[in-house]
Image (cartoon, rainbow, N blue to C red; front, side):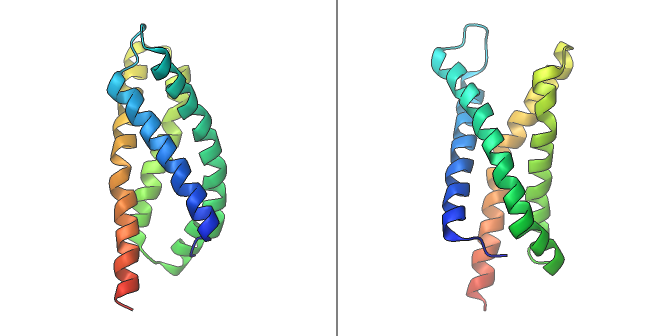
Amino acid sequence: MKLRPGFKLVLYVSLSLLYFSGAYVWARGMAPDASRLTVSLLHFHSIISLWFLILFGYLWHSHIQKGLKARKKMKSGISLLLVFAILIATVPGLFYFTDEQWRVSTAALHSYLGLFLMLPFLLHLLVKKNAQRSQ
């Protein structure tokens, strides 16, 4: 279940890029007259999210399935998994909903969950640290 140091670095850098590009776009807003930087960061966020899906597949196979089977850190792991699942599931709505209310609601859900993601992620890491200290 323990992640390899090289993969952990790639995962943390990728998640940081994904998180901060999304947070920047959220903070600036996506008005029709958005700056080139904001639009570029939104495009970057979309591209890095595709990269993250590849990492998530590896993470599922090498870490999540084993953790679920071993029943370790279930609360923090499942909460993190649910947030990721909802974030992934809302993406098609961001691109394809034509009804303005649905698109705005989906964008709000995606944005706020994305901003909230740091909490279950840090909780999962801290639970790991505390579990290691008590051994």
